[in-house]
Image 1 (cartoon, rainbow, N blue to C red):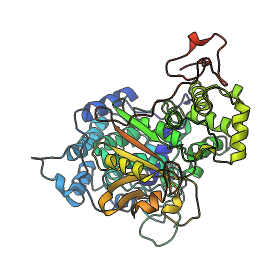
Image 2 (tube, rainbow, N blue to C red):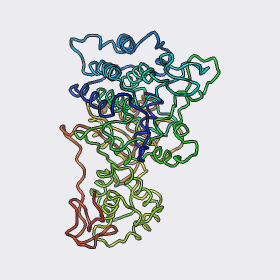
Image 3 (cartoon, rainbow, N blue to C red):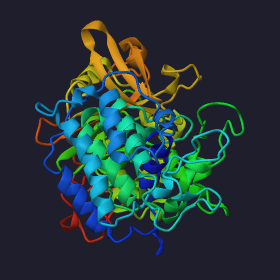
Image 4 (cartoon, helix red, strand yellow):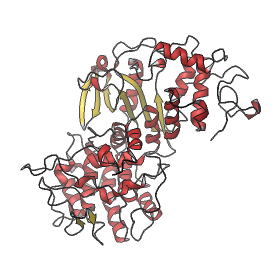
Length: 518
């Protein structure tokens, strides 16, 4: 859903306590709404893409529709005829076409039940540069008070349908300058690999303000933001289309600035954090597997490559609090005693066992060695994915229901001088024989070569532009197998130990006992 989807997805991943007061969902509970959405989409297969053209700028289309003249059904009919003509024949219908109609039916059913979309404040959007009208039914939204009038809570739903369908089906979510490339790439990959699921999640975002798979709720203040009716970049000009400011970093900051650090944290995306977001978009039948390839750069001659690969695939770091604590610990901003997340404790202990399985090196010695080596010991932010690893990921990129997210140096796509990985993109498709690797980012396609992506990287030598690959795939199919960790020597424990002895050791933990296990 272009700039609003980027902001919405950013809001999903903030881990805070939800305030007692949130917007009303009308006559329905959130559970009522979830049940309708789940029931309506439950039996529709994943589907395939029914549109293969260039991304469509949904804002330029949807803000120009007269929603007093055209209702939700009219909007869907227009899009089916003009953008998705392959869905006009119902006799041999792709499941994706069924899901398009199901999205419409779900909106209409919820409206008839008296429900109101919880994320409705993200729907009003200026229709012109004079900022005199919004893309909603007349009388539903007051542009002076920036709020919905009583009884008008569903007045912008037609715009939401238009925006959802164009963004999902044409892969046109544009996250440029928003700091949300990770979540937006995940949503786009989902739109490509399983458009039915993407339509369902977009419907959930509008109606319940999150996805049903996300373990935590958005920050309470997210519901009250109205990003579509902030001052435009071309305010007062004679341009035909409104030019929206894509900067959720400003739009999400409270007037007193109290949440600025929270927003900054969740815009500073890391690979382990993206695993958490991925798991918020898929159910238990999907696996989000990360390949970080930590081997090529490290200062530790005793490093167990397989064991380090296991931990750097972040199999137990779905909780963003764990990821944050590990990053703070690794950067020296907090002590071991201040690491309270059991997942972070287990990760750190396991990584230390990978470096020094016999316990010969203390934590202080490991830190000193890493410090002497440089800021990227273990090469966390140094491109090193090999051609073999890239081509293995391509097998998933070319399959339905599977998707690949790439952590890459943005300089590979634009000449910005960066060397470390600072951007997430979608590995859209590959033709290995022709040396063509299609990368999606910023609602655009980039035709790349293997040389541009992996350079001369080998198992022993870093190179290229890719730091990690994450594959999301159904677990019922052949799934990525994590490297097996090699246990530490019996009785060895580096930091997070329990005085109770080895009988307290949890399954799979290398080293001594963990202080606490989730």
